Length: 611
Image (cartoon, rainbow, N blue to C red; front, side):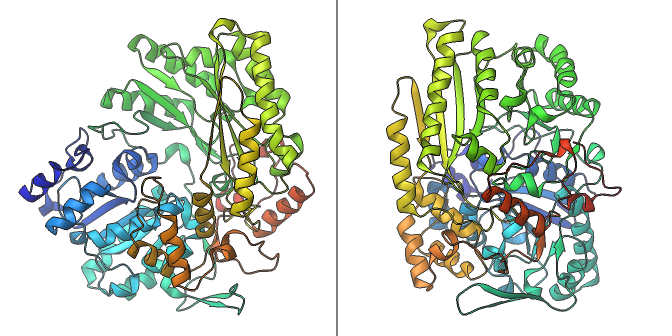
C-alpha cells in the first residue's frame, strides 16, 4: 500500500472502508487485462457493499476474460480531508490504482441524494465532471440503476446511461468498448455505435428545448439516435448470471448476509412504487435454482443468515417448498433464513415459525395509508382486517413486536387519513391485549412514516408533492395522534423529501444546480450530519431555478415529461389511466387476477410473465 495512503488510514475512524483485501475480492494480473472497469457506488462502503446488484455485476465482469472489475465508494468526510490534504486521487480497493487510470467508470444511480457524491468522486479521481469535457475514449463514464428512468438532472455528466438490467447489457458494453479501443475509434464513433444498441441512452445525442414557462417543449434525437430508448430485460431469469461467490466484508455493513433473489418485478401495482413498474414483467427463478445458489454462497462465505429478497417475497409461488428445503439444511448448521417484504394479506405463521427456528425477529408490514379509501386510491390492495388478522395470529404465537410503515402526503390524502394511521396503531395494540400469548411482556409498535415523493414512470409521476409547510403541519398532527405508550415513531425530514422530489422530476437544467450545490460543499446528502439544505437552496437561486417548479407542481396531462424518451415498457397511456382511477378512488386488481395490458410483456419473447 502507498505509504501516503497508509498515513491517511491512521487518521480516520473506519479505515476498513478503504483497505480492500476482503475475502473473495478479485485480484488479477494487469498484463492479462485489456479492459479495466471501476464499479463506483456513490455512497459509503457499508451501504454499497450491501447492494445485491453491484455484487452481481462484480461477479459477472470478473468472470469475463481480459476484464478486471474493481470497486470504489464515496469517502466519508474524514478520509476525503486526508486525500485532499495529501493530493491523493480516489482509488480502487483491489489494486489501489487511481480511478483515472481505468477504461470505464460505472456508477449506480440508486438515490437522487447521491448525485453530489458522484461529482465528488469524479473530482477526487481527477476526471472532468461533464461528458463534453472528456474528449478521449477513456475513461468512459456510464451509469445504471433505478434513477435512470429519469436521469436527466445528471445526464450531462454521463457518456452512456444504461436503461435496464445490467446482466443483459454489460457484456455488450464491454464488447463494444473493446472493439473501439482496438480499432482506435474516437469517442464520438463509439457513442454513435452504442446508441444503436437497445437500452443504451447517449445523452449527448439528444437536444432538449423548453417553453418560456420552463416546461419541456421537445426532446429531439440526432445522428440516428432512437426517439425512444427502450429498457432491456433478462429474458430467462432462471438462467441469468448469478455469482457463485461473493466478497465477505472485513467490517460491518448494513445487510451483512447472503442474498438470493426470488423473482424480479411485482404483480401488485401500487401506484406510488417506481420499482413495481420499472422492474416489470415479473420473472421468477425455480426453487431448485434458488436452493442451489443459497447453499453455494453459504458454503463459500460462511455467513449465518440468508435473505430471500424480492419486492414482495410472500408472493413467490414456491416459497413454502423452498423454505422447507433450506431450513432442513440450514437449521442444524444454525443458519438463519430471513423473509423481508412480507404482506399482511398472505401472512403465513407456520412459514414464519419454520424459517425463524434459528433466530426469531419481529414482524414488519406496510399498510402505507390509514384508511381503506386512500389505500384504494394508491392501489395498495390491503384491508385493515387482513393486517389485524395477521397480528392476531402472530401475537397468539408469542410475537410482541411489530413495525408498521406508512406514507404521508399521498395524492387525495386528508387529515382523516392521517388520523387513520393512529387508529390502526390503536387497533393493533388492542389486538395484542386480546390475543397475546405473553401479555406480561407488553407490545412494542414501531411506526415509520415517510413523505410521498412522486417518481418518474409511475401513475403518480404527474402529481405534486405537498409543500414543505404542509408537510410540517401534517407531521405535527400525526405526532400528536401517535403519542401512546409503547409506540415509537419516526418521520422523514421535510427538506430532504422536498429536494428528492425536485431531483426526481427534474430536467437537464438541474445539472447546473447539482454542480453548484457540490461546489457549495454539498456531498453525502443522504446523511443527516452532512445534509446542507441551505446550500442547496443557494445553488438553486444562483442558477435562477425554483425547486418548487419541479417538486410541488402538477404536471399537465399533455405535457412533455423530461423522461418521455425513456421507456420502462409500461406505456404512458396505462400510467395515465391508473392516475385517473386513483383520482376516482378505484383500485385495480393485481396481475394474478388477469393481465392489465400495461405494455411490459412487449419486452419479453413470447409475452411471458411469472405471476
